[in-house]
Image (cartoon, rainbow, N blue to C red; front, side, top):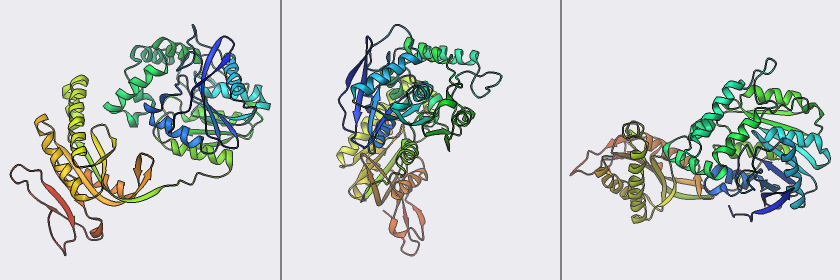
Length: 438
């Protein structure tokens, strides 16, 4: 994603950082959760993807709340009214007379209040994984009680900057590599004290009385297994806003980090009446998947620091082999790699060489190679060939390379070649009628 220029809007005595992306026919103001950083795309691919998708059909305005990201630090947590002033200041600075609002998580109640207070400036409202009231009560059982919320806030403050909150917000992504990336992101979003202050402020949020006064078209989107904000809060929210549409999505990750396209599809259809038609280039390519055998057990034995050091050495060796055999690293997967090659021979040689290279580290890697038609999605790849490659790698044993021949996929027979002279064994999928080994 091309980085948009960060500008500043003046809201009273505070400077609010904002960016404008895209040139769509309608303005869209994206109100993030309790902390944010408009330049965090390099540390958070999900955020970058969401910005790219939303700006493909709108003129997207993103900003950092006062006290967070690139906006001015403040001495205390801001009120909802001050945050509404910041939204108006950003819209004015961006020359936006009216816009749709997307309120995410803790940014949802303020977005609802803004829509009710300034109906002439809001064309539509989207509420994603958010709530009307932050703390449970006798008539509101959905959220954790105040004691639990305070305990979670104290815990978040003590661990801020270590990436541990990822296990709470996006458990599907919480491997060692993502924890490191998330810790760096936390430090860029806010200081520990400001993050805790904002969380404590949210304990007082209750906009239930405001919701029936909202008159703009409203979409409420919520994941069924969300942990920080249970689905009951989303259903209650939709029930209080006149005419609101509720969409329940599968999954338990909070925010938009693990599957931003799924969320963007719902927002785009609601605002434009049509779903996104992905434009992908398709090429014939060989994919290589690798991963470390027994990585979870090894990480537990070594501890975080020593495991991180071992991973860094593993990654360095893997990248050296990719460069040697002209492979392109698509992405690291925590304890392995996805790479592409212009032919299977180089991928096989790279995999076997990598298995030898990491042996002095007392590591074994399994690998899978498959050649097929792949979809190019920016720097990423997708399609059935990638899914097959992942399944092939998962079927390999410790220190084994498994190769799947697309040509013979209708009648598949796995033939194993035993290791010779210390070399890594290679398994090849061939038709039983043809036979053969690599």
